[in-house]
Image (cartoon, rainbow, N blue to C red; front, side, top):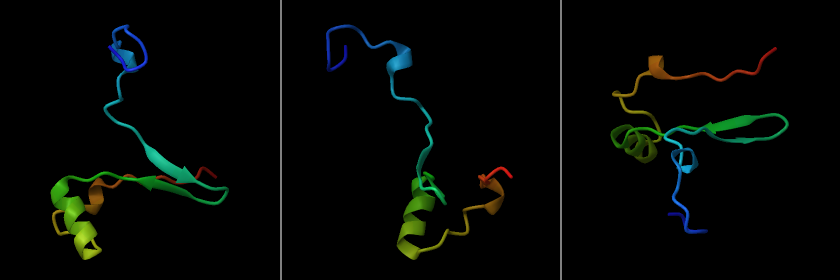
Length: 65
């Protein structure tokens, strides 16, 4: 059931497993990336990614020309 009425929640109405969170202006797009706790906490604490983080796993988003 959902919070707005008494009908069951169908699978398509559930929170998606993955989603892209971003903020944009006319000039920029900022995409927010989630990391495993061991990487995210260390990066937040130290201001840089730990050695366990690998650049080769990054996804780059570029503006089409």
